[in-house]
Length: 310
Image (cartoon, rainbow, N blue to C red; front, top):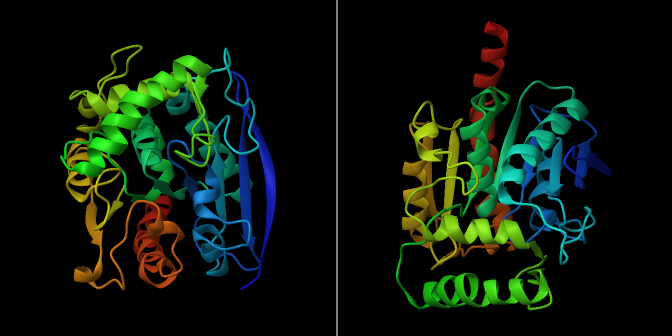
């Protein structure tokens, strides 16, 4: 199935903008899908410059897809720099709300599905904790390698989390005024100083609370939890989304309809997946993408029945 892609700028009231890439198939089936990237990356995790990836594949299956670049990522302004910064709380409150509204306005639908990679799932879940009304606008979710705290202990965790994310990255942030992850080859995009500092705190601390107003996210999610969510973890992911840490995040998200699946040979996949290649490896087209789409389709009728009963 053919599709067209277009770019949209979404201004944010508190400054800056989001970048939205819209994939529109010729014939649309079902609700739109909003895709959200993780830390030190952009929406490119869902679509390559050569037209491959999760978003184009979903469009080929007949789903309208909206891929978000947060403020400062890809071509979304302003770029991270000394004196130019937004906190993680501003993403949770302002950016997620603006993206949801844009997705629904562009598609003409009242509900959508959400797919988020890594830390993006933490930000989406935090938004849903603060704004329970947003849960009614999301029919289902798929989180790829999403965890908050990293409690596993192994060499990969000591290198990527303890040494780099908690140690060297804050030092680079203080020197540069932002986290230059791209030039340091730690990620595909840079990070605002404030949002990186906030994420380090959430990874380190036991309690999931907002550093600015002490909002308790776990307590809020205990009241209804998330929309139906498929949590995917890579069998080969040793630190950035270890299956045990993903399972701990599932518990933090309160009571919700969910399934946790580990992507690897022992569970029927053709390979053991890691943190990034669950979305970027060529084999993900047959191993991973259909699972995510099937989850959305399984909850499509739930969304329709809710709207008909309203």
